[in-house]
Image 1 (cartoon, rainbow, N blue to C red):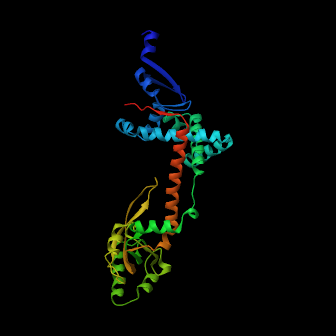
Image 2 (image 1 turned 90 degrees about the horizontal axis):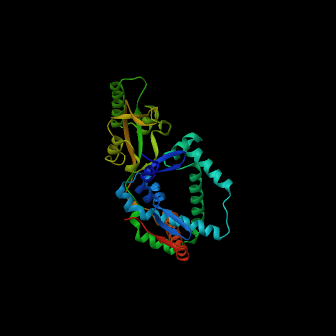
Image 3 (image 1 turned 180 degrees about the vertical axis):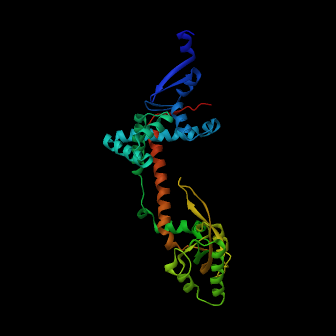
Length: 332
């Protein structure tokens, strides 16, 4: 095949140390201009690369392309506003952020970092440019941050009255436990020991006294008490959760077996195949209730501040778009 024919069929794009062979019609597609902001253009290739990192299907790419284009426009408008204010971002700051990302995400392994970037079709230089763009964008948006001090008490009251169910907590209980595990005993021996202690509870012995002298609970020194209230979704073990929330206040459970979990060498958590025998008691029950406004005031102030902040950011970006030349032309 002649060189001219080869040139008509394929274009070679060199980037990030790799060569990619791309069909001519595909090259035209990735170079398609989808947005223009003053003298800066955004290509379909830039937007598609960002979506590919999230493993979008072709259908999802078309559905969400405008969202990604808008995000890119917002960032570019932030760069323009940043420069218009005469501000500069020192390269040392970008390098420091780059080093922070390297340490936090890759434990300082530069080779692994480069390999991940290359797999995303991105060079180290391109990543640093993206990082710089993100830093400037967040800085410009931060100029419109609000604090809770700017939120009026009346607006907090209005929000609370309209959204009371958002500040409702379900039934909560405070538990105590006696746990029998390990000690090189067979499961049957543990069961027998637990049954003996349960019989003493039934005969009127004090649960706290028994819990401070028997078993291997981590709360042994606290007479088996967990010391805090928990809701259903805060108890991970299905067996403990189901039994605990069927008990009445002051009632103790019969001994029941629980499969103990353990952390494997790979960091995962799975069953250890070992059993422990539990006796639990519900010390106190708190009925479901709406939290009073004084307990959630700071949370509501934060919610309203973020809403106001986002509104200010939208207004600011709208002004930037009004003052700049912005054109969008997404592919069909």
